[in-house]
Length: 364
Picture 1 (spheres, rainbow, N blue to C red):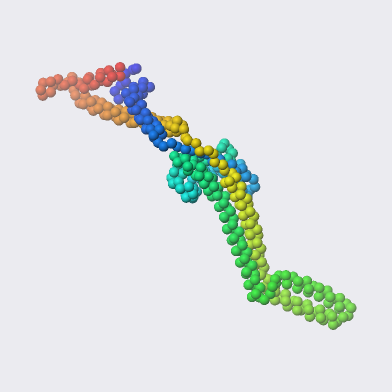
Picture 2 (picture 1 turned 90 degrees about the horizontal axis):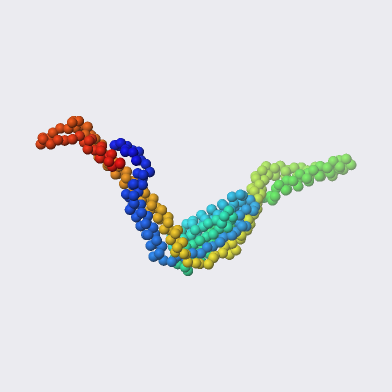
């Protein structure tokens, strides 16, 4: 390798290899210690047990537009929603209350995965308490499905209740209006009166045509009475018709709410945990598998930390060396080229003459 000038920053691969050989104890020791610590945690820790619950509810995904999860992304949306529900505070607290397992242990032990691109899901729970694995999985599936679908039934029920209240209010307002105005169904009465007046006018014309003046007079009096009823009902109809419109709107809203409740109940029945979930057998977790899944990542992290530590140490070392060389060059510049004699008659040689060969010898 060619000699490098003083202060040069050029670095070749052989320099990295030289640094790695000099710091080999760090590059090897830190990952080994980290991996050994992880291995001890796995080997000396309690035996872990695990089981898997399968959630297969195809009736909950796709189908009519009224369902919660429809469209091309329905399966992914259902998987994401279910995974979020499993770890939500409400569901975790409910499962903790059902099983007696602390919420923190539930969050650490539960894992949800989607089977391919389908709507089928797997829920895995791992813990050192074998007796709690199956109850936790059963309670988790029940509470998560209830969180997603039973809540929709509750919302739809509330909407039906609100629509019923609105309809009852509108009906009561109509009854109060009729009591106040002492008339029942004025809109129908108005229409029947119009028809009656039209019929009386026809009769009046017929009687006048045959010369029945008494009958024509009686018909005229009836027409006059009917017209008075119309004049009395006419100003009242707009308010009454507004109340009727409110009642019709409430009736339509109630019908829509009942339809939504029916659909929500159908989804809730399709999400019955007894039908769509199944818990597998509880089995001990292989220590070898646990060792590989924990020790290898820890070893990799330890190696990364070791490399970073070596880089920092080399950077600090080069900075100190560069500072020393600059100070030596500065002193050499202040010394006469031929040297000088000190006060004790000793010869002081130029610093450059003693420094540069040493630097070159190191590079050779």
